[in-house]
Length: 234
Image (cartoon, rainbow, N blue to C red; front, side):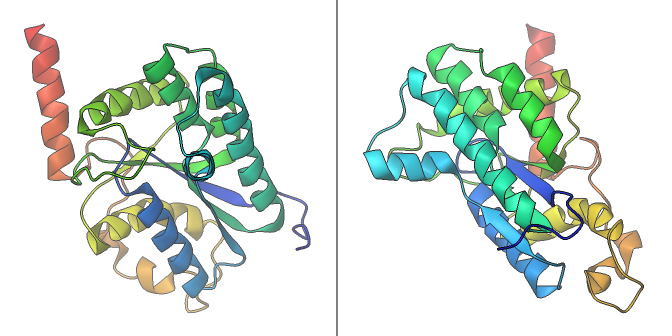
């Protein structure tokens, strides 16, 4: 496939979050919606770690994490060179998070945050409001979801990477994500009636953009309140 005519990389929508929070399902749905709305050339970049675990039959060791980080970023960069929109099922940031939690190694954090900030035009953080389900070698258990979520938010805040929380089940989760994506799409949209999410933009007053943690699902609000209570008690 040829590179983009204008030479600029495509815009990347990064989906990050703890395990079993619907990242892959959401990435596939967003990519399909963009294609259906004639948003241009759309790519969906899958998670390299999933492929790695499937191929090796195990989870990576500490010394293998950096290579997975690089491979994830390279996949995204390659897709962005030839597409207008790239939906990313995780980024290098998730590799750094798991390196820290599993191996106690935070050496990948700065590099991962720099790559993520440079690449992602929008970051979607999947909320912990879906039930945990097993998925082969890749998942550790429901007990790791809150620690992953907490560290991920810390890294995003530390490196001043804005994000929108996405919650809800099924179609509601997709619609919440679209609400966050819409402003990015609008900046590249044609005149009204010309496609590119014109139907979704209709009635925009009733669809709020999730620009902060004040506009999050009920389950997410409950999680935040519980954390605040725990912090106060401690």
